[in-house]
Length: 188
Image (cartoon, rainbow, N blue to C red; front, top):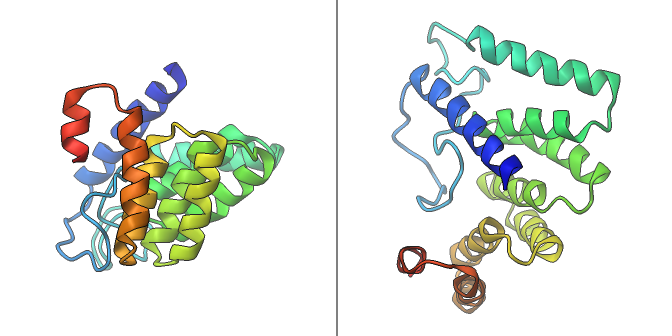
């Protein structure tokens, strides 16, 4: 719980930093509104979180974090904390292919990391690779049957493919895991 809270705080802090330094994109082709990424607007091809041709770049703190993760990975390619840290930064900035590269390395080291599989599935879904998304959400659930993000997102992938029964099944399983009426109402 503590580790998850720390990651969430770091992700929100990073997201706020990115959101203050980039313009808002209005169109999101194929991106479901309900998918819970840290940022729903992908970064531009420049990788800076800024539209092409815009001035600016990554804040120095973010550049340092990226470099620190890369340095740690160079010293130990199996450093899952660094692999996941860098993957999460790319994910949060909408650079899904780069995030996939590091999530893949992380799950090859730690084959039981349900959260990494879930984030990997989300990246694949955003890149419209639903088969790979389903595979990774399924692995996340296999490793942690109570992983709410994986169940919810798997349902979204099924829904996007018109597989309503499969989506319903995932969300019904998720409903059993929710503890408050507010959560249950929100899911419904």
